[in-house]
Picture 1 (tube, rainbow, N blue to C red):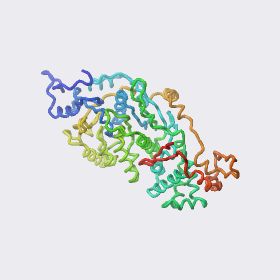
Picture 2 (picture 1 turned 30 degrees about the vertical axis):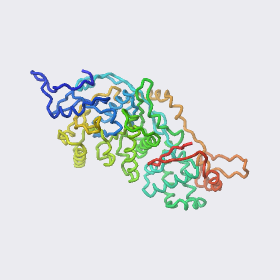
Picture 3 (picture 1 turned 30 degrees about the horizontal axis):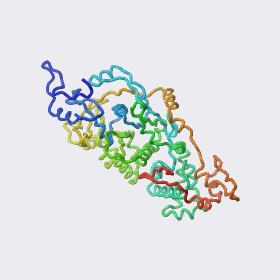
Picture 4 (picture 1 turned 135 degrees about the vertical axis):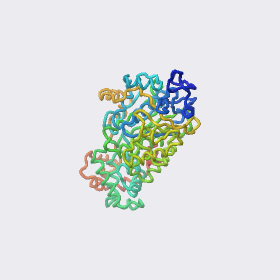
Length: 522
């Protein structure tokens, strides 16, 4: 039987008299997944602890921009589920973005290895399995790890996301926004962290206090706190993530020559001890896509599906403004053809306003060893529509590679809750060798575009250069290593003439999104 044949009238346990009729409730569930258009095949229905291979559980391709959630305890198979979905999206021409937290997703580029477990799973769910690798690009934040460097300019990253990384409070976040606004209006480009430090240092200096007073609501004390936070942040080695060339998120929307969608894998293993940083960087990528993409409305297939791993890290300690921006971005980005799947342990890790927008749900097993676990289990059960299963019992008894599924139908209605034995990925379930990964990175057509960092003249250099006594005298460029930022900025004595000359720049406009992210438009 082919993967897409419809389910026969009877299936289930074999008996001497033949296959008995499918139980009525199981038949109702299976009918909810009998879609007519293109769909992704997740696996086969489980009913009464029996796998019913002819009752296929699927997700319509057209509803994947309605977002989703993949949840479950550690070790229950979430990563393999992401790999399974990414493979099928790629095969149907849809680009995919995956965050690789543990460094084990790179195998999607290589054919899988057939073994007894794979053959057994394929037979159980009526999967026609064949070892297949998929087109992939590999990226690394700031070039830390095996990947094409992904950088953001400070201007592009914006004040809201930077405040999250710096762990500023609400007042300090608002003050940082005023500093960005000041730099924008004065034409002071914030490319890297030393640019922002230079602007803040000036505003806290004797010469800059007049400018500071014009920024209503920004106190010298708060600006000083921000400056110290920036200095400490950079001292931790975070400067590599900010600079040029800034990554263009349109790279994620590409397809390969054979029409398959390219899987973009962002390696985060080298920065997994910096969760505030990488989770916020993921949000920058998503916000940048939202900022740049045109409205397309409902489409027959997404332009991109973005998997946001370790999603709880994004929401931990987030301000109300930050959460509101996430909620609105998720709500609106679907009309730009982008689907977002949050990946975490339980639905309660995701704020209710965001969770309400996640129409496709794949819930792996949960543990109930402690009172907190039991509370999380009950909360998870309440997030599902009416179910024919005892979900509390089912969710604690699922095996690895099994999940409870409910998705949106082609008409946008929730499908019945279906316990599912998932298919096996066809690519390598593990990392490729580092040498092979490095070859893939350096042979990419994108490597030369982003590999080498560029340090051009920007706010720091402009503020640190001395005034020219003659109009035609070349202005000296600041040295790369500065003994004292405040001394160099304040000692320049040329800010007033600088502000007059670059208060407005012809053809330069900065527009900022919900998150304060920005692109320069020329």
